[in-house]
Image (tube, rainbow, N blue to C red; front, side, top):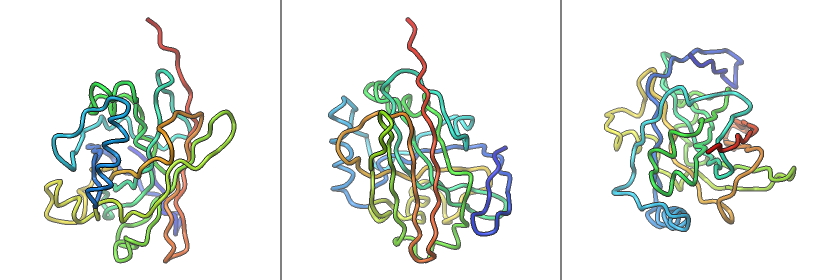
Length: 225
């Protein structure tokens, strides 16, 4: 059971997440998808068989904790909108598809299973943003050697609209069922993919003048052979 808090009312809601999905290659514009594919090909990742792809991940990887542990030095985060189905409708959060880049070179599906998926403890109701969805903005920041730098930034218009994404997932409604959660795709990285000591992400709603934020520290465990 994961506890979330509505950002506008401080009311809490507990969600029993039973299905966690990562929507990969979920760009709205093919050129942006191609850019991300080329970005990952540089580190040896095989291009996808089709787009988007929906990867299943163990639900215990979803966390609102302020820190995660990873194995080795080759992991990094990716800012993503998170949709969470609840008994009060679909919720919107901000999260990170933290990924092992070495594992990604031989299996994207396995690389997504290796690392925890941090998400914000605060959420909005999807109904409060769906009418102006394309106004939302995402950004992420990575901390390297104590210095925070901009890592990703851009509008959600680069990614499939939730209604279209869920349609391609096989749903006939723009709402997730209670217990389903989905990370909805990421933005190109500014510069190169790179690991850090902390990762911070922001989802901005300029229409309502509000933001969702989450930051997590990254503790690296040694690889013992």
